[in-house]
Image: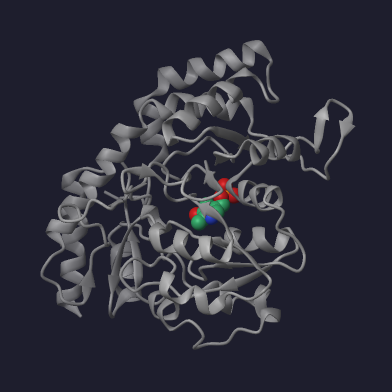
Length: 374
Ligand SMILES: *Cc1c(COP(=O)(O)O)cnc(C)c1O
């Protein structure tokens, strides 16, 4: 029996009636663009995160672009971020005309290393985008200290970290803006694309509301160069249903991660994800991905798993500073040794709330077999 990386059909089946009726209602109302489900979902989500404002947009990528625009990041500015992230983080910086400046990551968390940020600051630096990779929050205390002393904006990329917490406070409200993605495979996923910006700043919130809707204040009167980037009413209605289940699903992800961790001990070349379930309450990981590190044989193990019908993924196989699209930025191999090392070692195993203990036992058994065989 094969085990997928994530199982969206299984989740749909578990809440089919609620979802179907939410969809039917929107269709019956014909309320498709910025309909009432969007504003209700924005309120519910703001409350869940603990933010004053939430603005629904078309995707997580657009959430970053609009947040950067609303923070007035533009041509001539530099934005510091991690090279070990999905392309959208850096792409959004370029989209507003600014320049991404990469900074290496920590070996144990795979997140941006605050100790290395200051070295990257120049007179053009305007913002930092910390990415809470896989669902694990960044070290926000240290990042905030740096941002304060250099007067930099912080835009959190929370695309993989819905519901994650740092010091018992959800990610998204630590900086000036928090950006979420509702891409189907994210912890809170829609049935298509969707995104959200959360903020405690009314001025930024107003600006994003205008930007997502062609820069208009009143219909057919425009005061900003805007975008067409609205969260669909249908997606909002689906997400409202899912938001009611999210805490339960996050708990099941964490429980599955703990189960994996306990079974995966005792292999010296294999390191489970940094979570600190017991000893450290600073971080609450929500495991959008359950990512292990294999000091050798990563590709062999991925293939071995696949041959047994178990799907895994590498997030990400080539750090952004080495991508063709950024060759004009002038980076080279060796610039970010930790990111370059981790791209060859990380492997994300199947992770979703409905994953069973028996499936996890099976996956771990196959990994141990692969390590024995070779
Ligand atoms: C998914 C993701 C995004 C982009 O979200 P989309 O909704 O796919 O546009 C941005 N940053 C990170 C880290 C992501 O994982």
